[in-house]
Structures are given as C-alpha cells and as structure tokens.
Length: 152
Image (cartoon, rainbow, N blue to C red; front, side, top):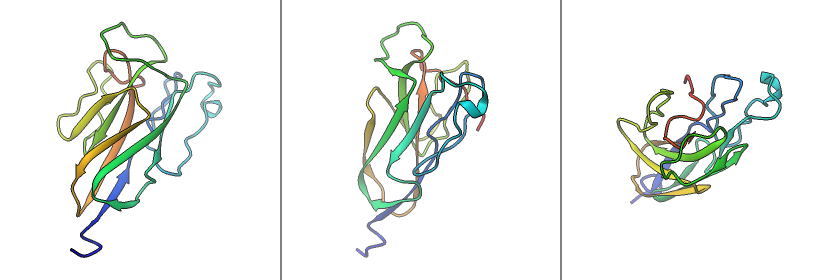
C-alpha cells in the first residue's frame, strides 16, 4: 500500500458560530478565527464551537480520527429529556453529513453519521482512506434542535 493510499484527506467544516443576536452562523475549522460577538453587537452571549483538531484540510492516517472542539458560552449537559434552557445543551458530531439547520426539527442528518455527546472530543472509528471526509460539530438544545439555527 502506498503512502497516499494510507492517507485520508479531511475537510473540516464548522465550528458552528452563532450569536444570540440572531446573526448567521458561519463555517469555521482549523486555524480560522470567527468574528467576535462585539462585531455583531452582542458582547456577552456568543456561543462558539470551534474544531481545534485536526486542522482544516489536514491529511491524517485512515482508521480512527479524533475530532476535538473548544466550546465557549454554552453549558454541556446530558440530553435526558429536560426542557430547553438558553445557553445549555449538548453537541452533535457529524461525519460526511449535511448539518441540519431547521430550528423546529432535531438536528439529525438524513445521510452520513452523527453522534450525540457532552464531550469535547469524539473519535470516529474505521474512517475509510482515499478521499475527503467532512467532520462537523454543532451545539444543540436539550431537545436536539440547533441551539442557534444556521443558514449555511
């Protein structure tokens, strides 16, 4: 097997940056920096989920791939059926899925994989070699709807 056959090209999307002010969520990953809450006119309540590893467009070995994130201004709690509380919920990690953004429906993709988590990292097992894969992360409410509906 050649070195190229053992590599997996990653395309990281999101860090689902959305502001309580209703600003549009943007796609971020790796070393990209999202706009600040102050730029949108809201200085305190910005929820920010940023993929910290692997970096955008990184090449990594096929197999197990760990996606790590940084979360600010959002409290991660177990999804146990409690009512929605502003600034509280959990994460949905996605693999090769279109990130659902409908504010009135659970953020469960029609295709691709997803995992519900309160952890700041998730390891996707047995990721196949030979092509680009899309890893995304979204903050969601306790009822699994997007915490800040994005218009991507």
